[in-house]
Image 1 (tube, rainbow, N blue to C red):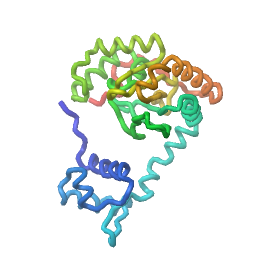
Image 2 (image 1 turned 90 degrees about the vertical axis):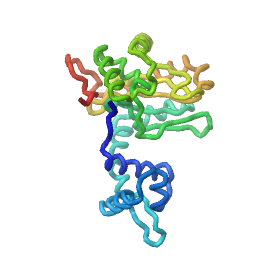
Image 3 (image 1 turned 45 degrees about the vertical axis):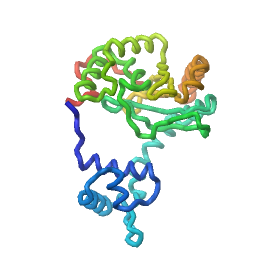
Image 4 (image 1 turned 90 degrees about the horizontal axis):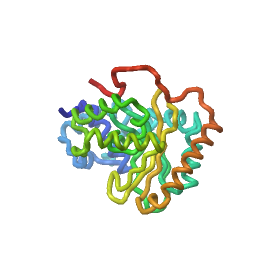
Length: 269
């Protein structure tokens, strides 16, 4: 069974994501051609977004462009997450020490979502987009998040991911997942070379705390050629920097949940 999003909502966000990628005004035909939508429904959608104040329509040029109202929707989140609790310092410090892509990620249902990041200028990178989501089973950050859970919770995530046909690697078994989880629980980090594409690797580690009850993970990504020889060095850098982060920015709320629950909060029935 495939979980399908509401079409109108999905298309609205896909339009905004297209502008995020293109970063320029677009004409009607450029939008429906790029997204593969019917012209008539695209016209109605764009008109609605103009009426609601999320798109600007330039009648003379016949182009659309998102308004600042779009930016304002989530503008409070960056300050709340990155600056309010010292996460910006943590990301900048790891970036300075490693000169690799550094990401802050969290759990969103059966996925991980990249909240904020810093990306180097050098070409040895393939970073995700802020806000992009990846299946927990298919990401280093997801594996780290699951390593903090009970085995039965991991089993449910695995079964739900397969039930909704979300798992891109049909060959992966629950034992494969648990084998990786056991390693993470033993070492405190996840290293995944040649993933999600050949030539790319990442290291992820739990921060041991949450924002509004949602656990956080810090990760470093780059080419396998650059990360693999420095794996042990980067792991120690991450441990030391996270420890310094906790000393500099002590938190009252940690990502702990000792309740014995039968149902996963991540799984929507």
